[in-house]
Image 1 (cartoon, rainbow, N blue to C red):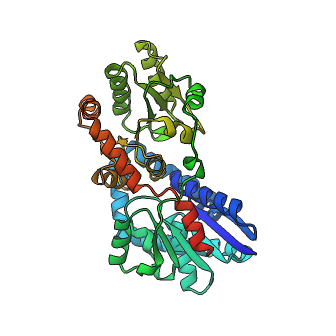
Image 2 (image 1 turned 60 degrees about the horizontal axis):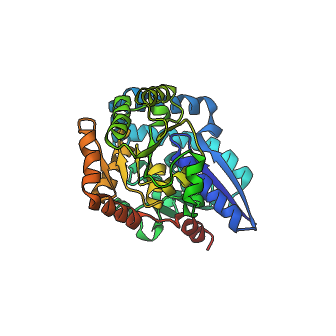
Image 3 (image 1 turned 30 degrees about the horizontal axis):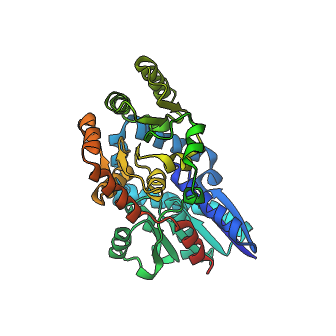
Length: 374
């Protein structure tokens, strides 16, 4: 029996989602395995996990400029050294779990666990293979600490591989598979059935709008975007997902009520039907988290990017825009003008859709698992 330990972190949903997708595929397709999945920071210290996760959320939401400084400084210099040093200290606690489980393979979807496991391997505390899955579209140096002790790196695109090679990572360790995504995004859905679930008209176009969830970034931009969609396109249907953000949810509902547009604007607090909604959408409006970007590309959807968190999400936005799969609408841009251009120039959306299809790696989860359990 092959024993597999999957480490993730609580900062953002992408790390956990990637871990879940890998675990699900392994359990469904391999029989002679035992898997455990662990939040690496939560295991080491619940208080540290709570404080650092809250600090990340507060900085990203209330002082994004400060988070950008932290993000950039953690690539190199004093802050990077502090991060690496703290991970070395925490690694000894994590090693207790590793020794008890005795895995044949460790899969990491967070740079902290990657660093800790690399340090333990350097100190000859562990000997098992270590695989790291990077969950964004640009490389950050924190993923590469102790890279010589890693056995596999799985990345989303060729440029990341090139950048990692320039940093000294061995080319034969790097696999351009894409970010793991749930196999639900590979299924075919009946448009009429999905529309019925959300009280939509099958013959009219649908836009999927992720409003920023708990971060609530750029609330004014978010509300202006929905106002523009309602005002400019009388037949366009919008499914707006507010997430864990009661203020945005209330603003949206007030706007729908005041414009009497409840027949075509559907406000949803939470849904587990994102694959189904993406299957019927014409395009998606979202902040560019690695998870949502991957799901949108897998669904071949053009992406209108708003309100990225400075740092990794801005880098994701740049990647999508430079590769023609979306448009980054910045805070000073005219939202109405951007939306009008999409419909005045049909080729623009068509080309963005083609680019999304080109960038998509729908079999990422399968390819990662097959590489690891070859």
